[in-house]
Length: 215
Image 1 (spheres, rainbow, N blue to C red):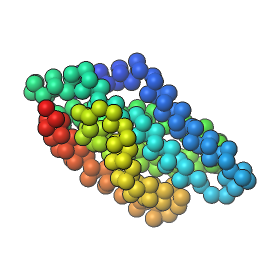
Image 2 (image 1 turned 90 degrees about the horizontal axis):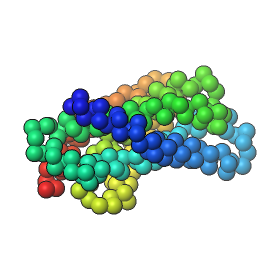
Image 3 (image 1 turned 60 degrees about the vertical axis):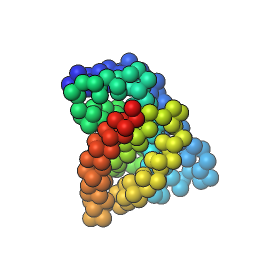
């Protein structure tokens, strides 16, 4: 698995297009919010957490489309099944690297997003924790959908239809965490972590079963 981990890390370093796409889409959605705001001063009246979650969801979904399809096209999925490698281990390794590839540009984009949306700098750590915790279940959901559709061609539209309804709890509790700095905020954060722990076994079992049944 260590070899696969290094291979996936090298893939994201060599193929910077996915990083560019994530960055461009994330910032574009935020800029759209800023440009269509009738009264720019209203941006400072409340934390615009909704737009951050929308940008994160769509940017995460964009990068997950090819997460397992590139292995399918190159024949690596078939190779994994012919060896003693655990498919669940392969799925978890690819998900872990994908999650890290989301966090790195997200950390760089947070100050830019904060300035554009008029968010005070003292709230940036709070937002960083919330988005990182929200990206955890979002990437698990996206990886699960990508694994389920690894054998399908042009599954981007189907992937969107499957993932978006499952992101509703993440949006509700993630928005609650970013909007309120109270005990309710801590409960929302715990939900995001618990939801991720619930989804991780599903990712390994359902993802590996679907890849095997695709032969």
